[in-house]
Image 1 (cartoon, rainbow, N blue to C red):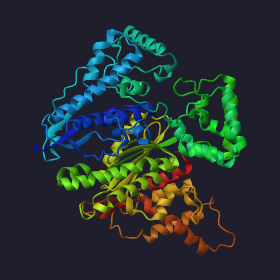
Image 2 (image 1 turned 60 degrees about the horizontal axis):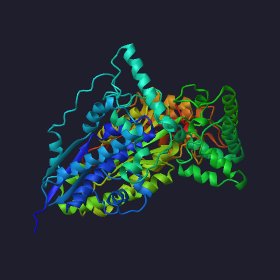
Image 3 (image 1 turned 30 degrees about the vertical axis):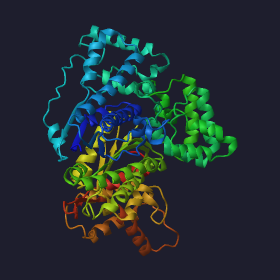
Image 4 (image 1 turned 120 degrees about the vertical axis):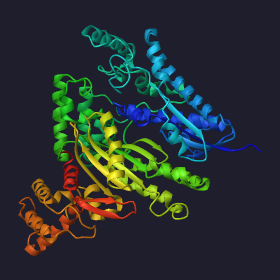
Length: 633
């Protein structure tokens, strides 16, 4: 009988490779490529007689496609569902090298297909090969200690080649491919002309290379991989994904379809007459597709068309924009007619579309430690729990009208409309806890099997690369470190940078406080967040600055603080009370409305013991409620 060993395999960079994305499709493609290459490495181990221990891949649809078991791509085969690390039992001590060779062979095949599509000249071949061959740092060990591969990663032997000249406008790290940009005006002119030639050679696909794009080989592969997938990996992948303006407009569009389908149909007709393209026809969000189907049959085709329009058509600032990347290709009269039609639709909804969308990241807590220190039986239980969770992610995101970027192991990345991000995060956390519940306390102690989430509410024109990078920092530095894990952190990111940051352990908030975040415009007894005017929010912020910053979590809010806030609330002329309501009844109603908001303003942290302690007060919770209510800052 062959002696069995444990292989631990990982490769990267991960966050850098994925975050270097100007467009949503770059973001999706980077995540998918990582998952696909990891699957190739796993498959090489399986073909050599090895058995994958982590993650659970038997039913994974992407893995089935790689094995050739699925005749046509379906469901999650279109989603990056495999993490960049795995462990396996093997009898061959060279299994790790075979896995690395398979990964790089697949990468070269994809890069070769992109090279052929772009029809680049041989003068840049050496630069292309240099960058392609240095793309990945691969680490693997044979050890029973799951943490050994992390120690191996710390032994840096992957030296990046020198990258002279002008840098890639997407990643900012590697040299742009032409090699002509050397700092002088003449060289920069030659560089721009070279890239203009590449763009012209793409013909109908020229829109995939922006007028200011000067990319390195690796960023070019990410950008054009979806277009060559059938040749490169054996099946087609999605080439149309929702844009950030489309995601930002989703809530507004859904409301318009509900309150006035005729106005929605009219806006579509004007937009098409103006020449707005149907760029979202293949990437419509599920909630919008359903809303379009629910209208009167006579209006249905027009409403289907509306939710297929380029997302920029729903923002006056984009209609007026002359920039090739940010505006629509319309003439002056076309812009005027479309703007007028949009203004009428905004009147029907009662407001303009918010320019903000949400990026959600969710990650299991302490997963590396759990997988690295537990016996094999526990690792298998954890792997199966992660498989159960991962299998539920796609449907959960779909139910919240989102677009799933990645769902592998304990990691999730998704883009969502503003109103659905926090509800989706709570639902995903619930699915995660359900998946791990059978393991507590048989395999895991009570405070394990948890997940943290980070949400950035980003302006649609904020650089996507920065949004992705900052959301990862929000997850690791705030939700996990400052809040103490098993927590959520949210941030508002304007075009110029972060504006509001808020966090809380999941179970620290009562449901009334969650309602302010998940249904901010609902009515009910407290009239939702609409009960708080801007002046009251600013009064609250001033008052919180002078409150004692500390005290046990169980301490009630100081009565004198509540009394002052109740008085300020009652003095707000914007508040409308039922006729005949006594002053005492108004005071009590004001108190009930204020307490959920104050709960959001209490800063809390989870200690290593699992205990949650109060760390003072911050108005950021109230400012986040105001943002979600007004759908902007």
